[in-house]
Length: 116
Image (cartoon, rainbow, N blue to C red; front, side):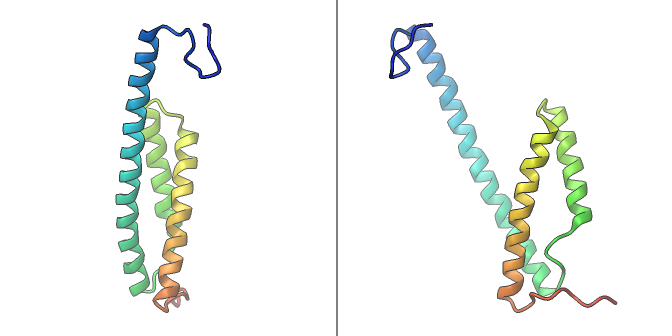
């Protein structure tokens, strides 16, 4: 394949059209992912406020483990690398916990609930 410094030099126009079509699809998927993450974080913010109001800890390791196992299974079914899916979810979970900690601090409930 011959290319120029612009990346489109002597490439067959049909190839360029297909490349554009695929990239447009990728852009649409990226936009959907961002919107879905925004919706997810709206829900987790509500969880954070509920946890803070009831002095629950920001993290729930048992739920996190269940979610990771669930996402790994979904990834396998979708033919996506489960290790990648787990890394992605761990990144999201860390951000959610950070938000929950901030919400707890802002509400004056930054201390964990006393054990009974």
